[in-house]
Image (tube, rainbow, N blue to C red):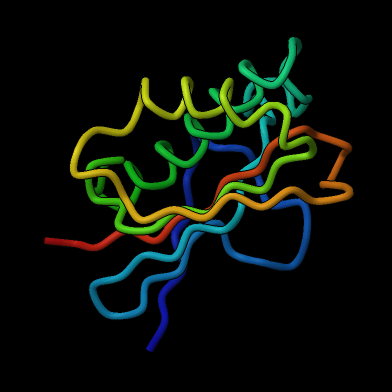
Length: 126
């Protein structure tokens, strides 16, 4: 039976979905955009700032479930422009350590609220 996760320190869902859902020892975290939870607005700046905030939002959801970024086994990045790939990789490397999670990165035409990056993850409870 799936159980949803609530995180007071992450941005709220902008639709009919859970921020995270447990399925056994796996936590599926919905795509997180660069919304500042304190203001409800997209963080100012470019793709680096947006990537950083998206990761922080994922980390907040993980923390509410007793996990950290080190527990992430799979991530998927949705980015507006593949030209930003190197910048996003550099930010990603600030937060994730070896052994890195498996990862996909997909360029998309548009993201909610016209943000530049969205990150979803799957984490495993040890």
